[in-house]
Length: 339
Ligand code: UDP
Ligand code: MG
Image 1 (cartoon, rainbow, N blue to C red):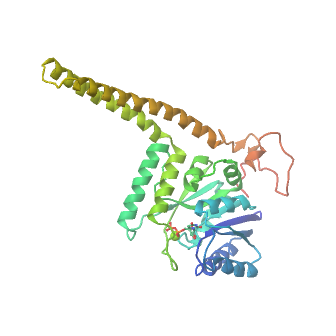
Image 2 (image 1 turned 90 degrees about the horizontal axis):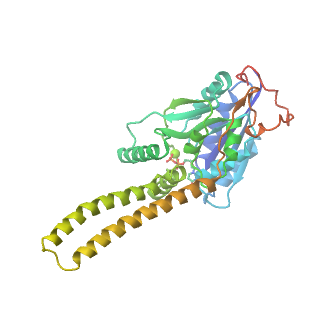
Image 3 (image 1 turned 30 degrees about the vertical axis):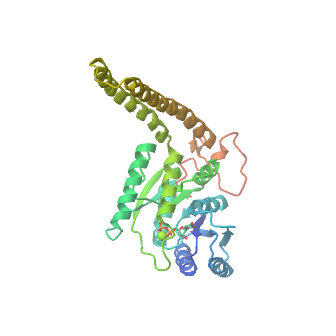
């Protein structure tokens, strides 16, 4: 089997007790994968404890470790972006720094990529009974809304993924500032397979998410994938007008029967009609803002992953057949399963 280069991307935020444990577990697992050299890209997301010092210690004894330290806490999404930007391997595995995504699954992910030619291996959480039922209900509600709004099903999805180099390149072409790794990597497509895994318990520290951060991520995720909420205003306007019709008829009847206060009818009718009209108008403006927003994001219109020459090594390689820029082997016409 050909030698491969595996990149591992791990974000850390205030995980001082966890760093050494995680590095030990990951390097041990990766070392056991045959014909595989590796690099570990560890990102310190602006920790305020001794995480950076612990990372430097780890790097001193493991030459394959590369470190990126943020100037402040930018959030896990930003950390993942930085990590993926730094990847030099043939494929990249993204996992959490707290060992909740167990490294013991990495060899299986690599096998699926190497031997079966999958370009994305999605870690799918096997549901656990021990999980807080309230948190699970909240997560499921979010995934339902997200699916309705964007058409992408993320139920039980996680950030535990293996991405082929081409998928990483495609990811780098996305222009948007606010990313949502789980959703965007699903949006990218490519040959994917789901790999169920059991989430382990955290052994040290505590979860860095709080309700506010999760709410922000959820709203960002939905707003980043869909302008449906804007179109909701039009629907509201239409409902308003239907109500106006009913109320209007009732008011007119009262007026004709002579039971209405003088002037009252006109006020009600005007209020209802103008209210409904404004909402519909706002909704229409919203539709245009929605268009602007989709354009401004500048996502590529499509992503090509293979041509008659076989799978592309890099997505950007599409226009003129570029001369080989590095020492990668030539494309494998059989489909590139043997990497
Ligand atoms: N993390 C990060 N920046 C943040 C919050 C979290 O880099 O602002 C990292 C954290 O150190 C961990 C991973 O993201 O390695 C997952 O975070 P956590 O375990 O707190 O999330 P949960 O498992 O509760 O979803
Ligand atoms: Mg965790």
